[in-house]
Image 1 (cartoon, rainbow, N blue to C red):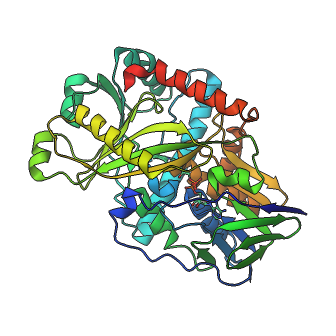
Image 2 (cartoon, helix red, strand yellow; image 1 turned 60 degrees about the vertical axis):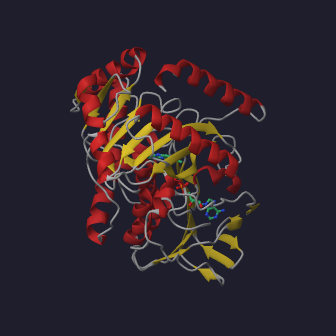
Image 3 (tube, helix red, strand yellow; image 1 turned 90 degrees about the vertical axis):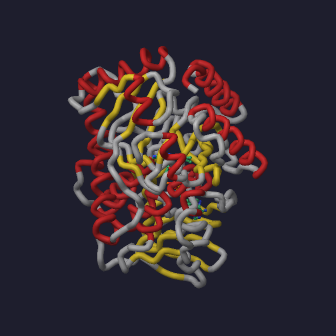
Amino acid sequence: MSLRHVSHLPVNDNSNGWSRILPPRTPKAALASDVEVDWIVIGAGYAGLAAARRLAENRPGDTIALIEAGEVGENASGRNSGFAIDLPHVVGSSKDELEGSHRYMALARFAIDYHESRIARHGIDCDWTQPGKYQTAVSDKGVRDFLEPFARELEALDEPYTWIDKPDLDRRLGTAHFKAAVYTPGCRLLNPAALVRGLADSLPENVTLYENTPVTGLETGREICVTTAGGEVRGSQMILGVNAFAEHFGYYIRQLLPFAANASLTRRLTPAERDALGCEDNWGVTPANAFASITMRFTNDHRILIRNNIYYNPKMRETQGFVADIARRHKKLFDERFPMLPDVEMEYTWTGYICFSQNGAPGFGRLADNVYSSVCQNAIGVTKGTAGGVLAADMACGVDNELIGYMLDLGQPSKLPPRPLLDIGVRARLAWELWNARREV
Ligand SMILES: Cc1cc2nc3c(=O)[nH]c(=O)nc-3n(C[C@H](O)[C@H](O)[C@H](O)COP(=O)(O)OP(=O)(O)OC[C@H]3O[C@@H](n4cnc5c(N)ncnc54)[C@H](O)[C@@H]3O)c2cc1C
């Protein structure tokens, strides 16, 4: 029997632009009495939502409580840049690395198919489209050190891509900022808050979602008991989908690295501004270096998204003053890229929290006889979090699914040094990363 007080809880600052541009949604009721269920799932991001749905499908006669501290769509799953990416960022060329990439792509494509079938079945309106994505480089060094090897690796994987030279790229994106890009067709773009809302509002009948219900205590043993302000939830098995908060539940201690990332959405461009931009509609750009440079999108409703600043943030808290500074910085980055649009402001700016591990491995698998997890998606949660949630449920139900092995092959988060050594090490490594990629901004 183990007892744990969960004291570090998520905070919603109501700044997420993706949900602000959607109609208001009424959250599901918070837990208001003691309940007994077969399964407890904690956290309603991609991982928890996928786990709860799959448990319900695997065991239609069982009851499942899905417990969420805040409101669906306000977490990292609703705050991201909205890329459902089908390819690994770095492939490598050895036989093992290529095999690893094939398994990785199988997981990512499983998750994309999973989303597409739920979106179609439940009529989820989340702006899901397949425009592909441009992997860009700003400097000659970025082209040489990242884009060219990436293109060679795609060839080794037999994956389709197009090399886009500068003049063509300028015309496609409406900015002269980049040197070249590798275009790959498989990436989907979406409004992430609309997708998670749609998934949460179409859960099977044997799942009860409790929103605004932070878990403050956890007792594990033969039975599991979760404490919340409104009552206790007892169950026989549990899946944890709480991302970097897993440490506060007593799991993956000194294995997880909570980072923050900031994003902004401009207001909608007017028809005259779109003419001045003169580019394709609906594109997505990911950078050669995700830490130093900028992810961008031109959305279907004619806003531009800017995502940059990934930094170590173990408290998972940010001040309003800092976010206001970020909005000004994003405006400057926007102006450098789109000088023909001088009057376009950032309408929304927000922070979200990402969970990394040092070796890039997910926190997936069995933690005790009756406790499973899908946490730590290393910034690719739209696909990896979803696959991890489904596969954690299959594992817990004893379903034979070869993708469980693929997920386990990604390894486990490696052990980190104790703080404050860890903080110094992570910040030094990040500073080096930013310096090394300084020409990619
Ligand atoms: C700005 C930004 C851009 C990104 N861009 C992309 C992208 O383009 N593509 C991509 O694939 N990924 C992207 N990511 C990463 C992606 O958003 C995450 O990997 C993904 O959301 C993780 O999903 P999850 O379900 O594991 O965790 P979360 O979405 O973090 O969900 C965990 C849930 O657990 C809940 N929880 C925690 N503690 C408790 C408690 N005590 N009681 C009850 N509930 C609790 C939280 O409230 C939260 O809802 C981005 C992230 C950010 C911040």
